[in-house]
Amino acid sequence: MAPSTEFTQKRGAFRTSFRFRPDALEHTLEQKREHARRVKVPWPEIGAPSSHERLILPDGALRWVILVPAALAIFAAWRDGPQPITLAVHAAGALVLLAGALLTRRWRGGEVTRIFAGERVITVLDDPQRATLLAEIESRRAGSLLAAEEDDAPQTVRERLRRLERLTRAEAIPAAEAEAERARLIGAEPAPAPDQSFRQRRAFESVTVTLGPDRLRWRGNHLFEGGREIALAYADLPEPAAEDDYDTGLDFVLAAGVMLWTFAIVSTLATIVTAGVPADHYVGGPGLPRAIADFGPLGLILLGGVALASVVARTRYAAPYPWLRLIADRQAPAIVAAVDARRVAALRAFARPNPARTLEEQTDVLDWLRRDGVITPSERAKHLEEARGVCEDPDLDRLAEEPPAAPARRALH
Image 1 (tube, one colour):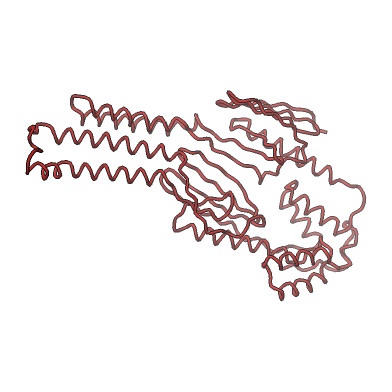
Image 2 (cartoon, helix red, strand yellow):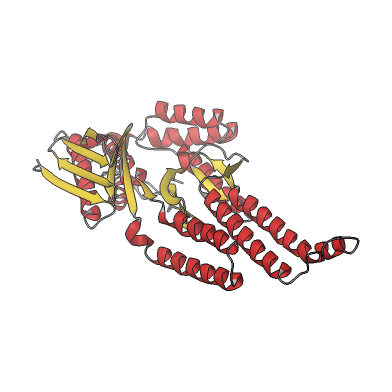
Protein backbone atom coordinates (compact mmCIF):
# COMPACT_ATOMS: atom_id res chain seq x y z
CA MET A 1 0.00 0.00 0.00
CA ALA A 2 1.35 3.43 -0.97
CA PRO A 3 2.64 5.57 1.92
CA SER A 4 1.16 8.91 2.93
CA THR A 5 2.45 11.95 1.03
CA GLU A 6 1.77 15.67 1.42
CA PHE A 7 1.73 18.53 -1.10
CA THR A 8 1.04 22.25 -0.66
CA GLN A 9 0.27 24.82 -3.36
CA LYS A 10 -0.11 28.59 -3.22
CA ARG A 11 -1.04 30.94 -6.04
CA GLY A 12 -2.60 34.37 -5.71
CA ALA A 13 -5.51 34.29 -3.29
CA PHE A 14 -5.63 30.47 -3.27
CA ARG A 15 -3.84 27.94 -1.12
CA THR A 16 -4.33 24.18 -1.35
CA SER A 17 -2.98 21.21 0.55
CA PHE A 18 -3.11 17.51 -0.26
CA ARG A 19 -2.51 14.57 2.04
CA PHE A 20 -2.31 11.23 0.27
CA ARG A 21 -3.53 8.55 2.66
CA PRO A 22 -3.37 4.86 1.76
CA ASP A 23 -7.17 4.70 1.43
CA ALA A 24 -8.22 8.31 0.69
CA LEU A 25 -7.19 11.79 -0.37
CA GLU A 26 -7.53 14.64 2.14
CA HIS A 27 -7.78 18.02 0.43
CA THR A 28 -8.07 21.57 1.75
CA LEU A 29 -8.78 24.69 -0.30
CA GLU A 30 -8.26 28.09 1.31
CA GLN A 31 -9.17 31.43 -0.23
CA LYS A 32 -8.80 34.93 1.19
CA ARG A 33 -11.86 36.16 3.09
CA GLU A 34 -13.53 32.74 2.78
CA HIS A 35 -13.74 29.70 5.02
CA ALA A 36 -11.43 26.82 4.20
CA ARG A 37 -13.09 23.85 2.51
CA ARG A 38 -11.92 20.38 3.48
CA VAL A 39 -12.86 17.08 1.86
CA LYS A 40 -11.79 13.48 2.30
CA VAL A 41 -12.40 11.29 -0.72
CA PRO A 42 -11.72 7.54 -1.02
CA TRP A 43 -9.54 6.86 -4.04
CA PRO A 44 -12.12 4.83 -6.04
CA GLU A 45 -14.63 7.73 -5.83
CA ILE A 46 -12.36 10.26 -7.55
CA GLY A 47 -13.37 11.11 -11.12
CA ALA A 48 -11.44 9.83 -14.12
CA PRO A 49 -9.13 12.21 -16.04
CA SER A 50 -11.67 12.76 -18.82
CA SER A 51 -14.08 14.25 -16.27
CA HIS A 52 -11.58 16.84 -15.05
CA GLU A 53 -12.50 20.46 -15.68
CA ARG A 54 -9.85 23.06 -16.41
CA LEU A 55 -10.63 26.69 -15.62
CA ILE A 56 -8.68 29.67 -16.94
CA LEU A 57 -8.97 32.33 -14.27
CA PRO A 58 -10.15 35.77 -15.45
CA ASP A 59 -7.66 38.63 -15.35
CA GLY A 60 -9.25 41.44 -13.33
CA ALA A 61 -6.43 43.87 -14.16
CA LEU A 62 -7.63 44.12 -17.76
CA ARG A 63 -10.88 45.76 -16.61
CA TRP A 64 -8.98 48.59 -14.92
CA VAL A 65 -6.63 48.97 -17.88
CA ILE A 66 -9.66 49.59 -20.11
CA LEU A 67 -11.82 51.72 -17.81
CA VAL A 68 -9.34 53.95 -15.95
CA PRO A 69 -7.57 55.46 -19.02
CA ALA A 70 -10.96 56.00 -20.68
CA ALA A 71 -12.28 57.81 -17.60
CA LEU A 72 -9.13 59.96 -17.44
CA ALA A 73 -9.59 60.82 -21.10
CA ILE A 74 -13.04 62.23 -20.27
CA PHE A 75 -11.52 64.60 -17.72
CA ALA A 76 -8.77 65.50 -20.16
CA ALA A 77 -11.40 66.51 -22.72
CA TRP A 78 -12.79 69.07 -20.27
CA ARG A 79 -9.48 70.67 -19.41
CA ASP A 80 -8.09 73.86 -20.95
CA GLY A 81 -5.17 73.62 -23.33
CA PRO A 82 -4.31 71.53 -26.39
CA GLN A 83 -6.98 68.86 -25.88
CA PRO A 84 -6.27 66.86 -29.08
CA ILE A 85 -2.68 66.38 -27.96
CA THR A 86 -3.79 65.45 -24.44
CA LEU A 87 -6.30 62.96 -25.81
CA ALA A 88 -3.66 61.44 -28.08
CA VAL A 89 -1.29 61.09 -25.13
CA HIS A 90 -4.01 59.35 -23.09
CA ALA A 91 -4.85 57.04 -25.99
CA ALA A 92 -1.19 56.13 -26.49
CA GLY A 93 -0.79 55.53 -22.77
CA ALA A 94 -3.89 53.33 -22.74
CA LEU A 95 -2.52 51.24 -25.61
CA VAL A 96 0.82 50.83 -23.85
CA LEU A 97 -0.92 49.78 -20.62
CA LEU A 98 -3.15 47.33 -22.50
CA ALA A 99 -0.18 45.80 -24.33
CA GLY A 100 1.70 45.45 -21.05
CA ALA A 101 -1.30 43.85 -19.35
CA LEU A 102 -1.73 41.36 -22.19
CA LEU A 103 1.96 40.45 -22.22
CA THR A 104 2.08 39.89 -18.45
CA ARG A 105 -1.30 38.23 -17.92
CA ARG A 106 0.24 34.74 -17.81
CA TRP A 107 2.01 35.71 -14.55
CA ARG A 108 -1.14 37.19 -12.99
CA GLY A 109 -3.71 34.64 -14.12
CA GLY A 110 -3.32 30.91 -14.51
CA GLU A 111 -5.37 27.75 -14.64
CA VAL A 112 -6.90 25.45 -12.07
CA THR A 113 -7.95 21.85 -12.56
CA ARG A 114 -11.13 20.72 -10.84
CA ILE A 115 -11.44 16.99 -10.10
CA PHE A 116 -14.97 15.88 -9.28
CA ALA A 117 -15.85 13.17 -6.77
CA GLY A 118 -19.63 13.19 -6.65
CA GLU A 119 -20.59 16.59 -5.21
CA ARG A 120 -17.10 17.14 -3.81
CA VAL A 121 -14.44 19.04 -5.73
CA ILE A 122 -10.65 18.74 -5.59
CA THR A 123 -8.83 21.83 -6.86
CA VAL A 124 -5.29 21.65 -8.26
CA LEU A 125 -3.59 24.99 -8.93
CA ASP A 126 -1.41 25.77 -11.93
CA ASP A 127 2.16 25.67 -10.59
CA PRO A 128 5.28 23.51 -11.14
CA GLN A 129 3.77 20.77 -8.94
CA ARG A 130 0.58 20.49 -10.99
CA ALA A 131 1.69 17.67 -13.31
CA THR A 132 3.19 15.69 -10.41
CA LEU A 133 0.03 16.10 -8.34
CA LEU A 134 -2.31 15.01 -11.13
CA ALA A 135 -0.11 12.02 -11.97
CA GLU A 136 0.03 10.93 -8.32
CA ILE A 137 -3.73 11.29 -7.86
CA GLU A 138 -4.43 9.32 -11.03
CA SER A 139 -1.89 6.63 -10.12
CA ARG A 140 -3.51 6.02 -6.73
CA ARG A 141 -7.05 6.21 -8.12
CA ALA A 142 -6.33 3.69 -10.88
CA GLY A 143 -4.37 1.49 -8.49
CA SER A 144 -7.28 1.32 -6.06
CA LEU A 145 -9.68 0.32 -8.85
CA LEU A 146 -7.30 -2.35 -10.13
CA ALA A 147 -6.82 -3.69 -6.60
CA ALA A 148 -10.60 -3.94 -6.17
CA GLU A 149 -10.82 -6.00 -9.38
CA GLU A 150 -8.05 -8.41 -8.42
CA ASP A 151 -9.31 -11.96 -8.09
CA ASP A 152 -7.18 -15.09 -8.06
CA ALA A 153 -10.15 -17.25 -9.07
CA PRO A 154 -10.17 -18.37 -12.73
CA GLN A 155 -12.33 -16.20 -14.99
CA THR A 156 -14.28 -17.11 -18.08
CA VAL A 157 -13.93 -15.10 -21.26
CA ARG A 158 -17.22 -13.33 -20.56
CA GLU A 159 -16.15 -12.46 -17.01
CA ARG A 160 -12.82 -11.15 -18.28
CA LEU A 161 -14.63 -9.03 -20.89
CA ARG A 162 -16.91 -7.58 -18.22
CA ARG A 163 -13.87 -6.72 -16.12
CA LEU A 164 -12.24 -5.01 -19.10
CA GLU A 165 -15.39 -2.96 -19.71
CA ARG A 166 -15.54 -1.81 -16.10
CA LEU A 167 -11.88 -0.82 -16.02
CA THR A 168 -12.08 0.88 -19.41
CA ARG A 169 -15.14 2.94 -18.42
CA ALA A 170 -13.36 3.95 -15.21
CA GLU A 171 -10.17 4.75 -17.20
CA ALA A 172 -8.19 2.57 -14.83
CA ILE A 173 -6.23 0.97 -17.68
CA PRO A 174 -5.00 2.48 -20.96
CA ALA A 175 -7.41 2.10 -23.87
CA ALA A 176 -4.69 0.44 -25.98
CA GLU A 177 -4.13 -2.21 -23.30
CA ALA A 178 -7.87 -2.95 -23.10
CA GLU A 179 -8.16 -3.20 -26.90
CA ALA A 180 -5.20 -5.57 -27.09
CA GLU A 181 -6.65 -7.85 -24.40
CA ARG A 182 -10.08 -7.80 -26.02
CA ALA A 183 -8.58 -8.62 -29.42
CA ARG A 184 -6.72 -11.56 -27.84
CA LEU A 185 -9.94 -12.91 -26.36
CA ILE A 186 -12.50 -12.41 -29.15
CA GLY A 187 -10.92 -10.49 -32.03
CA ALA A 188 -10.48 -6.83 -32.91
CA GLU A 189 -13.30 -4.30 -33.00
CA PRO A 190 -13.89 -1.78 -35.81
CA ALA A 191 -11.44 1.11 -35.81
CA PRO A 192 -12.91 4.32 -34.36
CA ALA A 193 -13.48 7.38 -36.51
CA PRO A 194 -10.47 9.71 -36.70
CA ASP A 195 -10.34 12.80 -34.52
CA GLN A 196 -11.88 15.97 -35.89
CA SER A 197 -11.29 19.52 -34.69
CA PHE A 198 -13.19 22.80 -35.11
CA ARG A 199 -12.06 26.26 -34.08
CA GLN A 200 -14.18 29.40 -33.81
CA ARG A 201 -12.84 32.91 -33.29
CA ARG A 202 -14.15 36.40 -32.79
CA ALA A 203 -12.90 39.50 -31.03
CA PHE A 204 -11.58 38.63 -27.56
CA GLU A 205 -12.91 35.05 -27.68
CA SER A 206 -12.16 31.59 -29.11
CA VAL A 207 -13.85 28.18 -28.95
CA THR A 208 -12.22 24.85 -29.84
CA VAL A 209 -14.19 21.60 -30.21
CA THR A 210 -12.23 18.36 -30.66
CA LEU A 211 -14.17 15.20 -31.52
CA GLY A 212 -12.42 12.08 -30.22
CA PRO A 213 -13.36 8.39 -30.46
CA ASP A 214 -15.92 8.32 -27.63
CA ARG A 215 -16.18 11.91 -26.35
CA LEU A 216 -15.71 15.51 -27.36
CA ARG A 217 -13.49 18.06 -25.69
CA TRP A 218 -14.69 21.68 -25.57
CA ARG A 219 -12.44 24.60 -24.72
CA GLY A 220 -13.59 28.21 -24.55
CA ASN A 221 -11.40 31.20 -23.77
CA HIS A 222 -12.50 34.81 -23.30
CA LEU A 223 -10.06 37.67 -22.84
CA PHE A 224 -11.98 39.11 -19.88
CA GLU A 225 -14.03 36.19 -18.53
CA GLY A 226 -11.32 33.54 -18.49
CA GLY A 227 -11.95 30.11 -19.95
CA ARG A 228 -13.01 26.54 -19.40
CA GLU A 229 -12.22 23.08 -20.76
CA ILE A 230 -14.45 20.03 -20.34
CA ALA A 231 -14.99 16.62 -21.93
CA LEU A 232 -18.43 15.14 -22.69
CA ALA A 233 -19.17 11.55 -23.72
CA TYR A 234 -21.27 11.31 -26.88
CA ALA A 235 -23.57 8.70 -25.36
CA ASP A 236 -24.46 11.10 -22.52
CA LEU A 237 -25.52 13.95 -24.79
CA PRO A 238 -29.22 14.63 -25.45
CA GLU A 239 -30.56 15.50 -28.87
CA PRO A 240 -29.34 18.95 -29.95
CA ALA A 241 -31.63 21.89 -29.27
CA ALA A 242 -31.96 24.87 -31.59
CA GLU A 243 -31.49 27.41 -28.83
CA ASP A 244 -29.59 30.66 -28.56
CA ASP A 245 -27.96 31.98 -25.43
CA TYR A 246 -27.08 35.58 -24.64
CA ASP A 247 -24.35 36.58 -22.25
CA THR A 248 -23.80 40.05 -20.88
CA GLY A 249 -21.19 39.20 -18.23
CA LEU A 250 -17.98 41.18 -18.27
CA ASP A 251 -18.64 42.44 -21.79
CA PHE A 252 -20.14 45.45 -20.00
CA VAL A 253 -16.53 46.42 -19.28
CA LEU A 254 -15.93 46.70 -23.01
CA ALA A 255 -19.21 48.57 -23.49
CA ALA A 256 -18.29 51.08 -20.79
CA GLY A 257 -14.85 51.54 -22.31
CA VAL A 258 -16.35 52.17 -25.76
CA MET A 259 -18.79 54.75 -24.37
CA LEU A 260 -16.16 56.59 -22.34
CA TRP A 261 -13.75 56.84 -25.27
CA THR A 262 -16.61 57.94 -27.54
CA PHE A 263 -17.53 60.77 -25.15
CA ALA A 264 -13.88 61.80 -24.88
CA ILE A 265 -13.44 61.92 -28.66
CA VAL A 266 -16.74 63.76 -29.24
CA SER A 267 -15.93 66.30 -26.51
CA THR A 268 -12.50 66.95 -28.00
CA LEU A 269 -13.86 67.33 -31.52
CA ALA A 270 -16.61 69.64 -30.25
CA THR A 271 -13.97 71.87 -28.67
CA ILE A 272 -12.03 71.96 -31.94
CA VAL A 273 -15.16 72.77 -33.96
CA THR A 274 -16.23 75.63 -31.68
CA ALA A 275 -12.76 77.14 -31.25
CA GLY A 276 -12.75 80.75 -32.51
CA VAL A 277 -16.45 80.68 -33.43
CA PRO A 278 -18.28 83.98 -32.70
CA ALA A 279 -20.89 83.95 -29.95
CA ASP A 280 -23.75 84.50 -32.43
CA HIS A 281 -22.53 81.88 -34.93
CA TYR A 282 -25.35 79.46 -34.11
CA VAL A 283 -28.02 82.15 -33.54
CA GLY A 284 -30.73 83.22 -35.94
CA GLY A 285 -31.84 81.75 -39.26
CA PRO A 286 -28.42 80.57 -40.47
CA GLY A 287 -27.58 79.18 -37.01
CA LEU A 288 -29.46 75.90 -37.38
CA PRO A 289 -27.80 74.84 -40.66
CA ARG A 290 -24.42 75.77 -39.19
CA ALA A 291 -25.09 73.70 -36.04
CA ILE A 292 -26.19 70.72 -38.14
CA ALA A 293 -23.12 71.02 -40.35
CA ASP A 294 -20.74 71.34 -37.40
CA PHE A 295 -22.29 68.94 -34.88
CA GLY A 296 -24.08 66.47 -37.18
CA PRO A 297 -20.97 64.33 -37.73
CA LEU A 298 -20.28 64.40 -33.99
CA GLY A 299 -23.82 63.17 -33.34
CA LEU A 300 -23.26 60.32 -35.80
CA ILE A 301 -20.01 59.40 -34.02
CA LEU A 302 -21.87 59.41 -30.70
CA LEU A 303 -24.68 57.23 -32.08
CA GLY A 304 -22.10 54.88 -33.58
CA GLY A 305 -20.39 54.54 -30.21
CA VAL A 306 -23.71 53.79 -28.50
CA ALA A 307 -24.57 51.19 -31.16
CA LEU A 308 -21.15 49.54 -30.85
CA ALA A 309 -21.42 49.47 -27.05
CA SER A 310 -24.85 47.81 -27.23
CA VAL A 311 -23.51 45.15 -29.60
CA VAL A 312 -20.47 44.49 -27.41
CA ALA A 313 -22.56 44.27 -24.22
CA ARG A 314 -24.79 41.47 -25.54
CA THR A 315 -23.08 38.44 -27.05
CA ARG A 316 -25.04 35.76 -28.90
CA TYR A 317 -24.14 32.08 -28.62
CA ALA A 318 -25.53 28.79 -29.89
CA ALA A 319 -26.40 26.40 -27.05
CA PRO A 320 -27.20 23.00 -28.63
CA TYR A 321 -26.23 20.94 -25.56
CA PRO A 322 -25.98 21.57 -21.82
CA TRP A 323 -22.49 22.75 -20.82
CA LEU A 324 -21.55 23.30 -24.47
CA ARG A 325 -21.69 26.80 -25.92
CA LEU A 326 -20.64 27.72 -29.45
CA ILE A 327 -20.10 31.06 -31.09
CA ALA A 328 -23.18 31.77 -33.22
CA ASP A 329 -21.50 31.95 -36.63
CA ARG A 330 -21.73 30.10 -39.95
CA GLN A 331 -19.59 27.25 -38.63
CA ALA A 332 -21.85 26.46 -35.66
CA PRO A 333 -24.41 24.31 -37.62
CA ALA A 334 -21.59 22.18 -39.06
CA ILE A 335 -20.16 21.61 -35.58
CA VAL A 336 -23.56 20.62 -34.19
CA ALA A 337 -24.12 18.24 -37.12
CA ALA A 338 -20.72 16.58 -36.62
CA VAL A 339 -21.30 16.18 -32.87
CA ASP A 340 -24.78 14.75 -33.39
CA ALA A 341 -23.47 12.28 -35.97
CA ARG A 342 -20.98 11.00 -33.40
CA ARG A 343 -23.70 10.94 -30.72
CA VAL A 344 -25.96 8.77 -32.89
CA ALA A 345 -23.04 6.52 -33.87
CA ALA A 346 -22.11 6.05 -30.20
CA LEU A 347 -25.68 5.03 -29.35
CA ARG A 348 -25.99 2.73 -32.36
CA ALA A 349 -22.75 1.03 -31.31
CA PHE A 350 -24.64 -0.35 -28.29
CA ALA A 351 -26.77 -2.34 -30.75
CA ARG A 352 -23.81 -4.40 -31.92
CA PRO A 353 -23.66 -7.79 -30.17
CA ASN A 354 -21.49 -7.50 -27.08
CA PRO A 355 -19.95 -10.78 -25.88
CA ALA A 356 -19.68 -9.34 -22.36
CA ARG A 357 -23.50 -9.33 -22.12
CA THR A 358 -25.90 -12.20 -21.89
CA LEU A 359 -28.63 -12.49 -24.51
CA GLU A 360 -31.18 -11.13 -22.02
CA GLU A 361 -28.99 -8.10 -21.26
CA GLN A 362 -28.40 -7.45 -24.95
CA THR A 363 -32.15 -7.68 -25.61
CA ASP A 364 -32.81 -5.05 -22.94
CA VAL A 365 -30.28 -2.75 -24.63
CA LEU A 366 -31.94 -3.23 -28.02
CA ASP A 367 -35.36 -2.49 -26.52
CA TRP A 368 -34.01 0.71 -24.98
CA LEU A 369 -32.51 1.82 -28.31
CA ARG A 370 -35.76 1.03 -30.09
CA ARG A 371 -37.85 3.03 -27.60
CA ASP A 372 -35.57 6.03 -28.02
CA GLY A 373 -35.79 5.85 -31.80
CA VAL A 374 -32.09 5.10 -32.29
CA ILE A 375 -32.80 1.91 -34.24
CA THR A 376 -35.84 0.76 -36.22
CA PRO A 377 -37.87 -2.41 -35.50
CA SER A 378 -36.22 -4.16 -38.45
CA GLU A 379 -32.76 -3.21 -37.18
CA ARG A 380 -33.69 -4.48 -33.74
CA ALA A 381 -34.69 -7.85 -35.20
CA LYS A 382 -31.46 -8.03 -37.21
CA HIS A 383 -29.25 -7.19 -34.22
CA LEU A 384 -31.16 -9.62 -31.99
CA GLU A 385 -30.50 -12.43 -34.44
CA GLU A 386 -26.81 -11.53 -34.48
CA ALA A 387 -26.79 -11.41 -30.67
CA ARG A 388 -28.06 -14.99 -30.46
CA GLY A 389 -24.98 -16.15 -32.33
CA VAL A 390 -22.57 -14.04 -30.28
CA CYS A 391 -23.93 -13.76 -26.73
CA GLU A 392 -24.80 -17.49 -26.53
CA ASP A 393 -21.49 -18.67 -27.94
CA PRO A 394 -20.29 -21.57 -25.69
CA ASP A 395 -16.72 -20.42 -26.22
CA LEU A 396 -17.44 -17.46 -23.91
CA ASP A 397 -17.75 -19.88 -20.98
CA ARG A 398 -14.23 -21.26 -21.33
CA LEU A 399 -11.55 -20.01 -18.98
CA ALA A 400 -9.80 -16.94 -20.33
CA GLU A 401 -6.39 -18.59 -19.93
CA GLU A 402 -7.39 -21.60 -22.05
CA PRO A 403 -6.86 -21.54 -25.83
CA PRO A 404 -10.07 -21.11 -27.87
CA ALA A 405 -11.71 -24.18 -29.29
CA ALA A 406 -11.85 -22.53 -32.72
CA PRO A 407 -10.06 -19.64 -34.44
CA ALA A 408 -10.84 -16.20 -33.07
CA ARG A 409 -14.15 -14.77 -34.14
CA ARG A 410 -14.12 -12.16 -36.85
CA ALA A 411 -14.28 -8.53 -35.87
CA LEU A 412 -17.79 -7.56 -34.84
CA HIS A 413 -19.35 -4.96 -37.12
